[in-house]
Image (tube, rainbow, N blue to C red; front, top):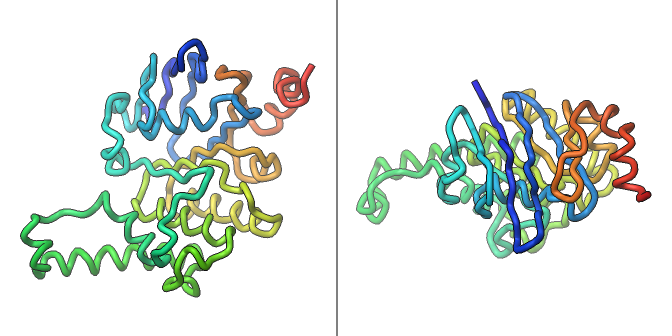
Length: 252
């Protein structure tokens, strides 16, 4: 079974080849990280997977199914969730309300049932609340449950965004620079959560990250990109010692 595969993935913006024939495969239960200098195409790959961008060439395979042409609003329902490099939360809503939004992929029922809040709708709402409370407990967010996002420090907002993604019950979680803007202690906490997401929740993780200390702590394998092309793929130590990777980061 192919859990996830990018097959000759490419996207061109005019004459710019942002992603140029990238191949990689992720095994279920793996923490797989993409690294590279700014402009290497890392977040563009995330946008292709989450169907924000249409690929110029190539295929995306998930759970043995071709999702290359899947509509963006159906991706979460397929089992793929993501966070963003720049936090995307509803600032005037509470933590609880933001997390409940993550349950949208699992909502069902008829329009009339929802309008009149029938017993079936009430039962469903209670079930969604229970799932959200599990995520609140998992990420230690109980003290912030009823606080508005606008009143929270940046580090907590990052965790809330992670929580909202988990509320979709993904099989594959895309983390776009999860340590960006975090201090050393918060980054250490994020490393523990990423490992627990895989080990305790059974969720496969695809991460884009610049902080190599975090990459080393959590990654099973690392893919290095530059100018939209693959430089190398291997363990964190193998990739960091690769001469092409060193030149891409340091120049020369």
